[in-house]
Length: 293
Image (cartoon, rainbow, N blue to C red; front, side, top):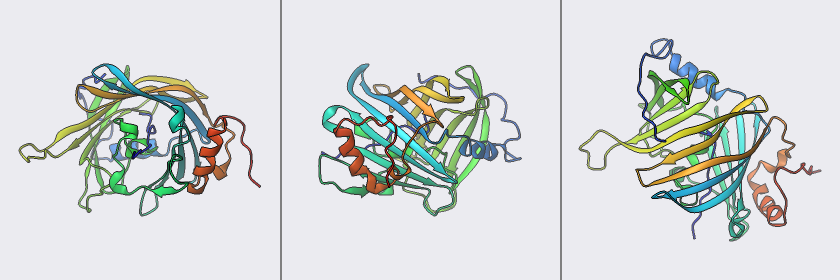
């Protein structure tokens, strides 16, 4: 069975959004790009930890459920994020590492480990970044801590109110550069709250396959709950949907920001098999770190 693990990040129902006045300084003065850059350079709470439940919903019924731990560390412009599956027991230890580097030629790399097979770590091809997590509506590309900038035109198209907060509406469109196969969409619309600066939603669009319409909505993400933990704001419930009958829901079960005692040596591809073995032996990822010497 081919299993692909990817969740969360960007911690990002389907409420309608009505644009009103343009975002401040946008677009001529570069206000939209400045807002995206401010979001990308925000305090990530590194080193950080989250535990989340992921539920897959079809026609209002939960068909599958998973528990996943998420840990990350930031070093300059590089962010390394781990995702490890705790439940169900049969998939315990499945994990992947996502590496983001703003200044690198490739802004994102993903490494996957499936403990049920050989103890190998696989580099995930960019063309697979939109594949769903365990059959969910979340893809590898949805877990980025940052909004992609390279190869896109960024513009503000208005404002709206979401979760009672004023939010700028920012569009990303493909630039004249060759299209990146890391994303299956050609336009993305992000909803960024001003205070606190958090991502409250995203809509992804792609061309119609028959070419009769310029684009269609591929998937939609909405944050349905926020909380302040360790002085940082984070989403407590995120819904990603494709159409009217299926959706995937992430719900926060615990988080620590800037206080997680994690071993830096865990955040490399070669550590994934060892982490899988430890999880299967009963280790809890939020336990005090055992330092390597």
